[in-house]
Length: 266
Ligand SMILES: NC(=O)c1ccc[n+]([C@@H]2O[C@H](COP(=O)([O-])OP(=O)(O)OC[C@H]3O[C@@H](n4cnc5c(N)ncnc54)[C@H](OP(=O)(O)O)[C@@H]3O)[C@@H](O)[C@H]2O)c1
Image (cartoon, rainbow, N blue to C red; front, side, top):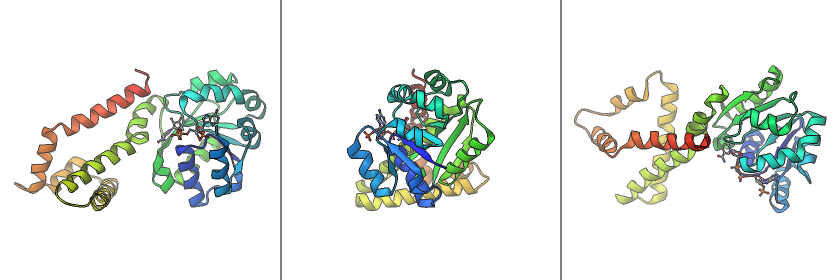
């Protein structure tokens, strides 16, 4: 199976790194092109991928074409590859935020094409991603399964309805940044009390990792788990209440609200 990438930025590289690491796709079956030859060519060479001289050449070589450009560029790219896509009919997979399957169908003007929309996050790079997948009405079970397997090889997959993509994008696509923010805030507090920033960051990150693993392994809700950590009259309940007094829960929900609103163009 030949896989094409139009765009070789952060997300494309994270996805490809996860596959190469797990040996799910052979490097010489990946065809790639982006805007700047001085960026995509050295990257392709270093990883054994095939660098193509145009987006059209990527489509010509590929069974699956991943659209890995910013949403604002997508219309231009689709116009450029449209004729070749209509002739070759590869499976198109878009990861563009805020861009629906209908938006892509309208641009590509071929009602028979199989198109999948995904929302991965950068953790695919280390095999710990969280990716949502939805297909248009033309997508075969076989192609949906291929896509699901590709992303299950580098993390977890959720088959969700397209109406839920905005909230998924907020709590999975954007949220690595929110989690980094939380880790950094804890590490800064560590610095305030005399720890070195690097050491405090590692301590905070390991604690977030372990706590997330425990939530995933447990049948309990996080709230029940909070109660188990808080001893009566103890330090943790004092910290927790002070965080909530400063608006912790509200700050998180407001952050998600803003992310969803932006995704929906509000
Ligand atoms: N980053 C994330 O965490 C994340 C998460 C979920 C979804 N996404 C989605 O993934 C997509 C890519 O995001 P990103 O973060 O990877 O962006 P990025 O790092 O800015 O990469 C964008 C890529 O598009 C290439 N490009 C620009 N114009 C092009 C053209 N005309 N033809 C071909 N390639 C072109 C750029 O080329 P050069 O490198 O040569 O300049 C670059 O490689 C977006 O639609 C975004 O919504 C991102």
